[in-house]
Amino acid sequence: MSFIELTGSMLRDMLHDDELSADELDQARVEDRTIVRVNHEGDIEVRRHDGWEVIGGLLGGFEERLRKATGLDWA
Image 1 (cartoon, rainbow, N blue to C red):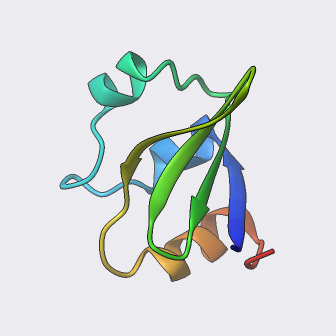
Image 2: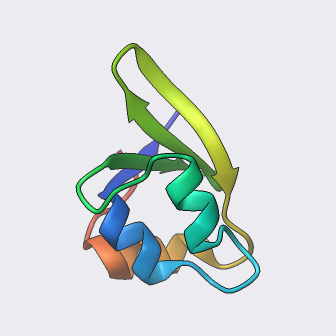
């Protein structure tokens, strides 16, 4: 499976109002420097000490938003 990795700060900047809220990110312990990744289905995963944890998802058009926010492509 392919992912685009980014920081919690980048994720917060690119989220739409109908996606995860700032409170939900705080509850999931996503800080500015937290490493997160998004797959082709839009699932947001957070890097934890023992693996990855799915915390939510992105909705339509997120592929281009990810590329624009990170400058990266699927890897």
